[in-house]
Amino acid sequence: MADFVIRVVGPADAHLFGRIAPDVFDGPVVPERLAAYLARPDHIMVLALEGDEVVGQVAGVIHHHPDMPDELYIDNLGVTPGRQRRGIGRRLMEAIFEIGLQRGCEEAWVATETDNGPARALYRALEPVEDERVAFYQYEL
Image 1 (cartoon, rainbow, N blue to C red):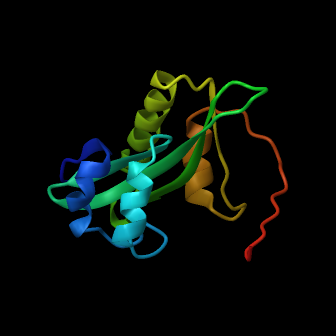
Image 2: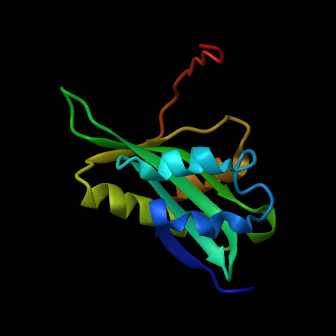
């Protein structure tokens, strides 16, 4: 198994997205969208790199509320299938949790599909409070 490096990325790091392993992101990374994402101070992205290849990523958003403490929403986590179950997902989550704490968040939350066994196993291993929710999506605005 190759060693991997965990790296928090910002606007100057778009060059790191030149080589991305399969299924790390849900779709192709669009340069303009990447630049806009990385430019937002409340957006966080952490990569797992093996050499110059992105083998994992976690993205989050800090939500500010007028009536509650700031919270970190984990928006997306992906590790290429060939590198799963090697600690990359856990390390990515630990890194983004630490950033959330440093930026004043008091809690973090993540959601996944009920049939996503690998994600659910990882999240449970992080010892969260798990509750059952119903999500509603408006796909066209």
